Structures are given as structure tokens and as C-alpha cells.
Length: 325
Figure 1 (cartoon, rainbow, N blue to C red):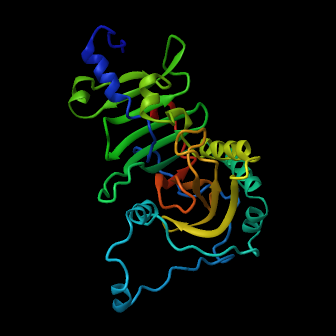
Figure 2 (figure 1 turned 90 degrees about the vertical axis):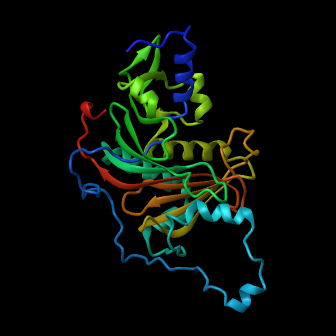
Figure 3 (figure 1 turned 180 degrees about the vertical axis):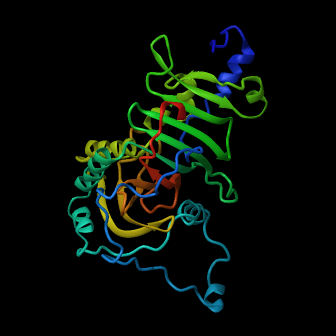
């Protein structure tokens, strides 16, 4: 498809509008039937090794509630919106669990082990991706839900919006497939009227100025491995700073699946520095050993949310082909 003429303000406006889409991705389109679990050779941890206990306190009595403010602080309301939908009960560290003991002893080495296991076992996967970066206290409908098809080699991502699409209903990228003047492109199929005008989509530079303005994370940085890469890289970069911290805090649940929970703290500078957040709460699926949930905050206590990124309905090694992208 030809690139829209630079002299056409209408088409240029289309490109600017479409640049908002390459943010993150979610679930899979219809494809080959697959098991939700990894092959049996992938290490798993039996559910009876540790039990997750609920450490939430019992609700106050009506008399106690009357002594409190009638409504929680706005920051607390926003923070509650970040994780309550997906996160279940938490539990303490169980040192009888070898994986938990490893994570407690050296959480960075544990994250690197998760990455090694992923690289050894995963070729592709389907999933649903749930992304939220707006946290107005009264707006509970900001979360995007996206179908994702993902393949490691060649690096391929197909995103189809199911909920809260901004300007596109589909984004597809395959490394090396589309190029223009040495720049890699992604195919964007817009929604609504623009989609009717360009039903086969338009191609945009994945690292162009419009894309960079739309999202700090381009489409070629999506996926479990890329997420682990970024977490590990920033931990190593910040390791000499006294404000840096990485610790395993125990077991947890995400989307009703047992997880290991790790907290990372960086020398965050209110969005002006080189680090993306102060606190990142990472949920590593206990069976799959991949980061299925990341919750980002601007503060130490987790009251000022920046982003919520959750992956559900994962099916590994489904046999994706070029035609799926």
C-alpha cells in the first residue's frame, strides 16, 4: 500500500490519529486449539507445596465505620482500582517451597531463571492482555482488552482490540516484513470511519515520532521475555543507588492463579528521569514462571498508580504460522 502523500493534510492527520494505537496487546484471534498449560517438561510447582492465606482483615462493624471518614482518600480509591479486579489473596513466604526460597534468597537471579525457562520452552502463545494507564477515581472503564497472537521467531505480534479501542481495531507487526527507507513498519487497521476508508490498513514506522508520542513502549517490546528483559535491565542499572530495592514478598493470586510476588523499587523522579516508576509489583505465575501481572506506581506505598498490565487466558505453543500475522 502506498504511503499517504506528505502534501495531504487529511492523510497526515490520519497517521497522527493512528499513532495512538501501538501501546500494548491482549488476547488471541481465533486459531488452533491449544492447551492452556506449557508442555510437561516445563517446571511446575504443585499446589500442595504452599497454600495462599488471606491476610485481609474482617470488615469493621457499623459502629466502627461511623468513627471513620465517610469515603477513602482519592489516592486510596485509585490504588484500589489498580489491582482489586485481578488480584486475590496474598500469603507469606514459604521457605519449604524451593522456588520461593530461591526467590527470597536472590530475586534477581530468580527473574533470570524465569527468562531462561521461557526461552527454553516457549515458541509462541495466545492470550488476552488487559492494559490500563488512566486512573480517574470515577472512571472504571479505562481498561483496554486486547487479543494477542505472539511468536518468538521471527518476532511477531498481532493485536485485536476487544474493549476500549482508541483508534485502531487491529495492529500487526512481523520483524522484517514491512520496511520503508530502512525503517520497520507495522500494519494498522483503524476503527470506525477511518477503517471504512482504509479497510486494508495503513503502515507506520514503529519508532516514528507519532508512535513515540503515543507510547513509551513500542510494539517490538511486547511479550513475556521483553518484560523480563526490561525488569532485569533496570534492576542492574539501578543496583548502585541506595533507593533501589528488589525483594520477594511471598505468594499471591492473579486471575485465580497462584503466583509469586516481587516488588521492585527504582530511583524514580516523577516521570522526568530515566526510570518508569518508583514501585513495580510483579506477579510471576507459579506454574508458567512468566510475569502475568505488573502494577506500576509513582510512590513507595503504592497509592499513586501509573499502569496496570495483566495477561490472562494464556495458551502456549499453539503452532502459529505466518498467515496468522
